[in-house]
Length: 265
Image (tube, helix red, strand yellow):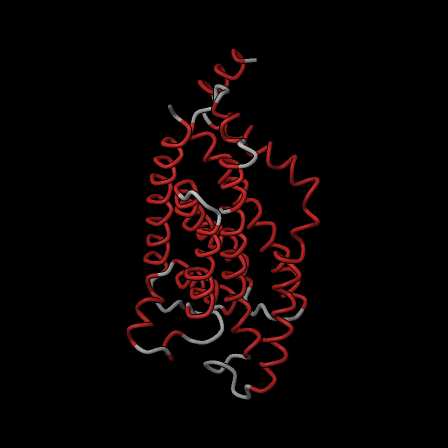
């Protein structure tokens, strides 16, 4: 078994990471029902409540666009963010502290990079399947005004990598799970509220506006909104993608460092 693994690793470097990814897929087959509400039904209910409920009182929409149509791309990006952080915090912490899956994997011929890449691939899979279903439902509501809406999938994939990698590093570095709750309280919730999901960032004071621009979520929201509405984003597409890519690469390097510190003795 070890020989097969080493030969496969030499000829196909992605094989070990895929084995880790497959491990999480097997677990998902037994637990997927528990995540349906938080990752799918809750965003749909938000669309109904804010888009159709609150939107009915906004006569002019936002920028001449019906509020529901304007809101949906923001919810696409924020849902991807929340699924990403949810799957990059307690499951990662559990693999270090409670279940200790990472230690078992590191005792095999798997390298630290394989362990991190395989788990990141699973988080990416969760985000893409969630957003694909979300796009299907919102399309039935007539909230996708452009066929370019499918471009939101690679956007949220890059957002997932840009967020998951540094959160992996953060989770691997904390000693108590209370630090994970603080991440949601002081990072995820403020980003969701002030990064252009529910109202234009331009309505914020200048200082808060620039704080919103720093977050990876705003860049994904702007790209998703441009795709679903068929308009030009506020910033350049290349600039958005490069910014998210920098977050992903920096997060990957930090995650590798944090995981090696915990797993390599």
